[in-house]
Length: 433
Ligand SMILES: Cc1ncc(COP(=O)(O)O)c(C=O)c1O
Image 1 (tube, rainbow, N blue to C red):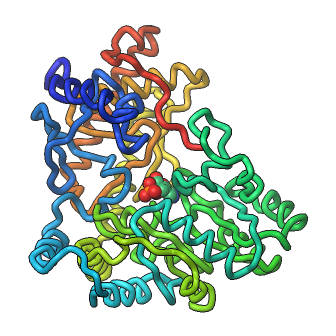
Image 2: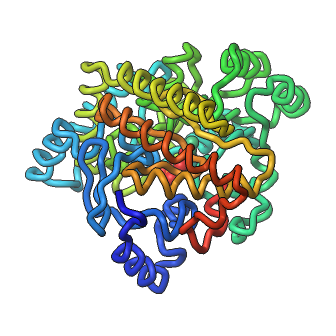
C-alpha cells in the first residue's frame, strides 16, 4: 500500500479542466472538492465489474458507481453485447424503432404503477415531465415536493442557496417543500391547500428509510385529499427490487420516475404511471430528439431481463447488509461513532461526532485512508453495491474501512486529525437542498 496515492495525472487534468469547463466537471457531485482533494483520485481511465482504475494506474473497489446508475456492474457482458449488437444496426433514426415498444412493455410488466411509459434522457427531464403531466391532468399548479428532483428551474426554485441564482423567483410559489417521515406535516399542508395541489412528489427512500407505514400513509392522505402521488425512483428504481420501492413496500403511486439504475449506465429516463393520467402526455409538448435512442433502449431491455431472471436484488440486499453490519461493528470496535442509515442496497454511512467540523475532517481522513487501501466511497453519499460486488470485495472493503477507522480513532484521541490529512482545498461540495 502506498504512503500516498500517486495522483499526478488526475491533478494535472483537473487543473486544465477548470480552465475549460466551469467548475471543472459536468456533475456537481463529481467535483473533487466534494471528496478528499489531494488524497483521492479525480479521473477514471476504465472500469470492470465493481472495480475502477484511475488515470494514474491505481485500482479500487468502487461504491460511488457513477452516483447510482450501475446496478449490475461496469461492462456487464449481457448489457454490453445488447448495446454492441444495436450499435451495428444504428443508434437513432427518423422513424420509430421496435425497441421503444419492447422496452415500454417490459417496464409495464415490471413496475407496479406503470400502464403507460414515456422515455426521456435524465432524471431532471422525467421529474419535470411528471410535474407537467400531473398539472395538465388536474388543472392545478402546486406541487408538494420532498427531496432533490434535478437541476430544472422549478425544482431549484425551492432552494435559497447561492448556486440557485438564475431561477425566476415567480416559480417559488409553484412548489412547496414538506419533511420526510412526517405525516402530520403533510396533512397540515393538504388540509389548507389540497384544492391547489396537482401532485405530492417524494423519494420513496433516500438516505433515510421510511418509518413503518409512512409510504402507505402518504398514499392514504393523497387519496383522502384527492391529489396525485408520484414517487421519484431515480435511485431506488431497479435497486431495491425489479419494480423499485413501490414493489418493495407494496405502495403504488399514480406516477413514477426512473433514471440512473434503469439501463446500467446508459442515459435513459422513464416517466410512467396510470393510463388515465399518462394519456394526457399525448397532447403535451413533452418531446426530446433522443428519447427513442436505441442503444439505451437495447440496454434497458437487457437489464430488465437480468433483473427479472437472476437473483440481482437478493445479491444487492445481502452484500449491502454485510457492509452495513461490518462497518457498524468496526465503528464500535474502535470507539468511532460511525454507522449506516437507510436500506442495504443503498446504505448511507455517517459519522456522528457532535462537532460538525470534526465530522468533516474525519470524513476526509476516512476517504483518504480507504482510497489508499483501494476503496472508493463518496463523502456523505450512498454506498452503491452492485451484482458484481463479490464476498471477497466486501471483505476487502471492510478490512480497509476497519484500518481507516483505527487511524481515525487514534487521530481523534490525539487531537491531530488535521495533521494527518493529505487533503487540500476542501471546500464545501455540492449540497442538496
Ligand atoms: C432522487 C433523484 N431525483 C432526480 C435526480 C436528477 O437526476 P439527473 O441528474 O439524471 O437529472 C437525482 C440525481 O441525483 C436524484 O438522486
